[in-house]
Each structure stands twice: as C-alpha cells, then as structure tokens.
Amino acid sequence: MKITAVNVYPVSELRTFLFVEIETDAGIRGLGEAGLTGHERAVIGALDYLRELLIGEDPFRTEHLWQTMFRGAFFPAGRVLSAAIAAVDIALWDIKGKALGVPLYQLLGGLVRNRVGCYPHIGGETTEELIEAAEQRVDEGWRFLRWGCPADGEHFEPAAAVRRTISRMKAVREAVGESINLCLDVHTRLDPSDAVTLCRETEPLRPYFIEDPLRAENIDSYRMLRARTGVPIAAGEQYASKWEFRQLIEEDLIDFARIDLAICGGITEASKIAGWCETHYIRLAVHNPIGPVSTSACLHLNLAVSSFGVQELPRRPNESLADLIVNQPVWERGDLLPPTAPGLGIELAHEALKKYPYEPRPLPQLRREDGSFTNW
Ligand SMILES: [Mg+2]
Image 1 (spheres, helix red, strand yellow):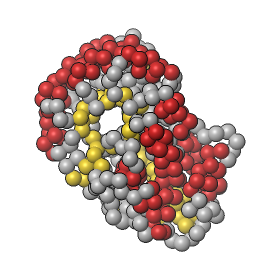
Image 2 (image 1 turned 120 degrees about the vertical axis):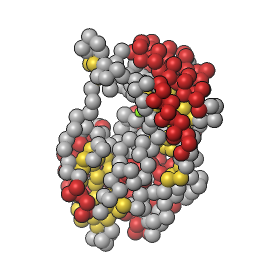
Image 3 (image 1 turned 45 degrees about the horizontal axis):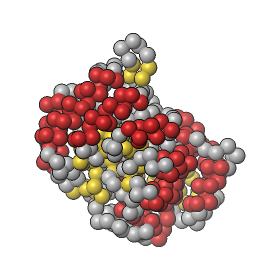
Image 4 (image 1 turned 30 degrees about the vertical axis):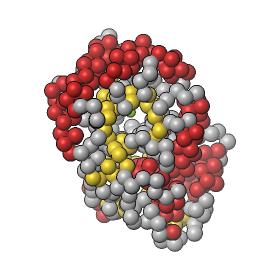
C-alpha cells in the first residue's frame, strides 16, 4: 500500500480545528487532527513539507515515518512540526486499523478496560453558577469535574484569583461530596509563590489533581513545587515530544501526564510516553480540548494502556461537528465506550466541509491590571 495524498482541512465551528486526511492507493483513507489551536496556519505550512516526504511511502511504517518526519530535515521537530506529525501519525494508525479490519486499540495491545472515565469542563461567573454546573454534571453521571482558575474578564490578578479559587473549590467539594473527583486547571497562570499557596491550601480538599500550576518552559520549577506541596500535580499539555516529558517523568515531578496526542507526535509518541509513565506509576490524563478525531485517538490509547487516569472530554460525542465527523463514539454516564468499527471508527463526511469555512481566530489574551501580559 502507498500513500497517494495528504489532504488538510481547517474548519471553524465552536472553535477552529485542523483535520488531516491521508489517502492510499488501496482506497483506504485515514483521519488525523492537529492541535496547537491559534497556530493552524503554521501547522498547515508544516503539513505542506510533510506531504513531500509521505507521498509514495508505505502507511504501515509508522515508526519509520515518524523518525523521518521528526528528524528528516536535520533539525529535530519543534512544536509546530510535531503537531503536524501528530495529525499524520494518527491518520496512519487509522489506515492500519482499517486495512486490518480491527479497531485501533487492538493494535495497541487490546482492551485493558471496558470504559474510559472522562471529565467535562464546567464554569460559572459566580460560585453559585459553578456549583449549579457541578451538580448538573454529577446528575448526568460524570464522576470527574474540571474547571479553571478564574480571570476577571480580560484581567488576571494572581493573589485574588488564588483566594477565589480556594473558596470555590471548598464550595464545590461541599456541594458534590467526597466521591467526585475534582480537577483544577490553573492553565500556567501562576508564578511559583502563588502556585505554592494554591497547592498547599487545596490539599485538604483532596483534588484529583491541580493542573499546570506553573508555566511550562522551565521544568526545574516543578522540582521546587514538588518539595513544597503534596497535592497531586498534572502537567505536560504544552510539550511536543518524549524528550520534553523526560525530566518530569524521571524525577517524578508529576502524578498525571497531560500528553496531547495532537501536539506530541500522535499515537506513536504517546504510546512511548505512556510506557515510560508506567515505570514511574504516573497516570495519563490526556489533553483533549479540540475535536472529535483527537477524542477518538485518545479513547483508543486509553482503552489499551495500563497507566490511565482520566480523559478530558469538554464536549460529548456529537455535540460538535456531528455531521462532519460521523460515527463518533458512544458516551454513557461519564464514560466513553470502546468503538467497534475498524481504525479510529469515525469517518469524514466531505459534503459537510462547506458548512464550516475556516476563519482564523486568535485565542483570548489576559492582562494584569497594570497592563502587562499574563498567560491566558
Ligand atoms: Mg489544561
């Protein structure tokens, strides 16, 4: 079998998405998705380069093609190229599953679990609204909840945000009880001193994890935080390869690895990181803020790895792009269930593409009250 085309489809709906479709001379097509929302046009440029490497190649050679894409131009891939590689790699695994007539998880080791627990995103301007959203999700069957460290409109002041975050988590814990797992996403908004305060003060509330309490650039800063709090920590959604995860894993700096399959090299790279996590008893909490192709790829990996914690699922199947990405997986009371169709189990309905023309959209930005930039 040979690769004959690499088609790139940026689309806009609730957010922007970047899908990749790989065609073969056997008539089998595979689907992938690239992360790095906001930088789609750079990823599209990277895909133009990868297309030249891929046409005529055997799609079954996922490891060889990954090495060629990551290292082929001498300079190792950074985040933009790695997101493009991720989309291609997911599509190649989809092709393999379809060609062999089995769901992708069968190629990754088979089922190690029958369902994959997920967390939704909740929010609310006021604490009352947040509690209402939490209770509604619990009623729907979700056992995990996730919300963020609040900004005040376009402004973010760390000390005030930390105080508010602590009081909101207390209120949610009181409302939903002890059996619901609480995940807080700080979204890299805090400096170390504020992050330490937040982590220590939330320890008694037993969150499932505090996510991205620090910025991602300096991994050593997690060593400092680790020494000063016992709260479970999740990080990694901004990393683009196993090498960026290396220190976090080898020094036991995290409890949950937030691998993004659509940024961090696809199924091939995520499987390696998952195995590495297993040696340190670190669980996966895959980052999945984007579209239904990413959701399916995460689902198959999570069905087949032992080092699983929870999967992010901001939108239930068919809440987004239901007519474009068809045969999305089944969700049941907080869990995604194993798909039965070959490959990822989903298909691209080309005729629906025209309904979602791509419009580049900048991500939101936050400022401190003095006008200086701070992470969103
Ligand atoms: Mg996050």
